[in-house]
Image (cartoon, rainbow, N blue to C red; front, side, top):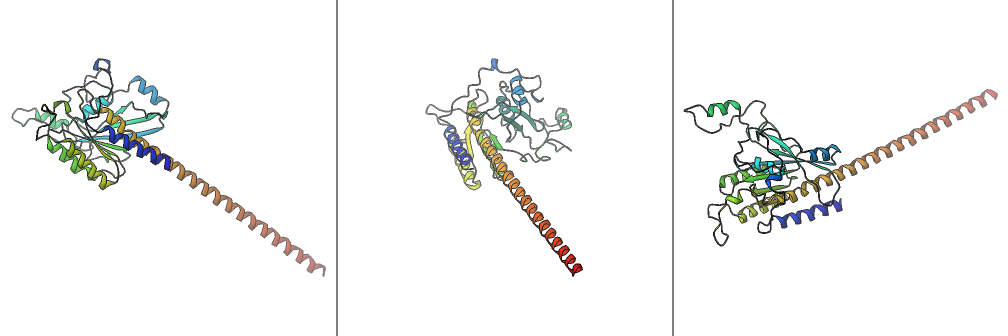
Length: 317
């Protein structure tokens, strides 16, 4: 337990160093022409790569469920695609319902096979009927959000169940997307690590001195919000900037995944220890019960023999 906790603490310290926006470097995922080709419809489920299928085919030591949440048009689907190694696509359609994908991720200096399942969470599903109605002449353009019966959205599904971490994505050019994150943070279970990721860094203009416009959410503001939330929850809440165009900041996210991995490993060790202690207690109780029954049988047999001898002596006398 102590070793696992020290691992979590050291991982958190390394993540805090990485989330410094001035120290973040671009992840070396290679050029887009070296990435797997996108499917015809980006909304369709993505097939696992051959390497990932072979890796997971040997069995996973740990399973991680990571939620990607955020307001509409904040880049959630683009983030999931980039984590899967797919090329950047600027014209992705809005996510109609919850979609999932698997990420090829490995813990550093560890031989454990980790299966990372990323959920692109849609708060309220978009029905096909509302999509068709939005295209009718005279009707307002855009997608009407309708709560469909049995829809795969956060209104119908407890997305936090079985989750190990949450990544909230916002657009620093749209303050209301950060306010969405602020409203959602209290609903996150306290044991889950949280990363607040500001996207569209490539579109945030800066002046000659590197200062951002006044209407852009500053890095310091998000950092203070994350620190305040971490103090309230007693669990890690980190913040960082990213760009899906050039993969800037994805190294932070890859390092952040070490936190849920270490916590899952700690929980597994705790569960193993609990099961071991429970089995030991059961064996001890079984042994005690066996000895008690043996002693009872011995006493019963002794008493029976004693009564038999006395009965014989009485007959003789």
